[in-house]
Image (tube, rainbow, N blue to C red; front, side, top):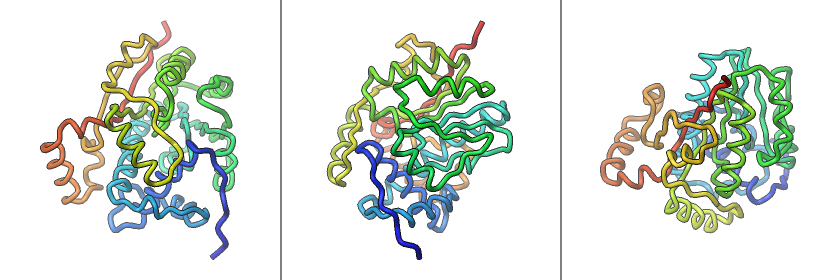
Amino acid sequence: MASRQSIQLGRVQESLLVPLYARAVDTLGKRPILNDPKAVEMMESIDWDFRRFNQRRRVVGCALRSAMFDEWVKDFLRRHPEGTVVEIGAGLNTRFERLDNGAVHWFDLDLPDVVELRQKFFIDSGRRVTLAGSILDPGWMAAVRQSPGPYCFVAEAVFIYLTEEQVRGALAQIASNFPGVSIAFDTAILKAVNHENKDHARRKLGARFAWACEDPEEIEGWKIGLRLVESRTIGNVPDSLRSRLSLPMRAAFYVFAKLFPQLTKAYRLNLFAGQSET
């Protein structure tokens, strides 16, 4: 086996290794939620201590979260097969590999150090482009606007690392520059944010959550041109994914939701839509 390569990432960027590990472990399991052999290849080639994330709950949660975001993107591509998808904070995600329909235009956006790492594993093409930049810097938008609409943005485990002011500014920029946009991202209440930050510290991760959102409907109140289309908890699995879950797993989600309804709602996946141009 070839020697593993060492990596250098910023504190927040390092968190991309958590979902990478989760997708790889899920893929190696008996009944994977996501079949992601590329994740296994990347994990096995990176010199980093992944054992600190060896937690069954986290593996299942990350894999299921990615699959649920995939379903929203699939629905967008069914309606707009030649549209444009933008993955915000792409990390080492393989969503393009999982969902490419042969016609979609795709952008993977992340910070320069992450892009440098991505380029060791992924190659751009005519329909798939990697952009180095921050979601907080609108300079990347010009390249995306040259791609045909409509537009779908996905920000998986990204905005929760930003402040509310930064999230509001980023979403307002997207909504104003891409009329009719679809954008999917996750939110967590303050109790969940504090719990996860303690867990990050225990696992010696430098990144910390910064934005708490008690109710995703609050974002409509920001008056930035976004309306909430759908909001789901991790346990509220869409019908299209239920067959991928084992019967014991489905039963566990059901029991947990009945016993701890408020905890179930602490973390949500949300789909918003922008206003169309008139």
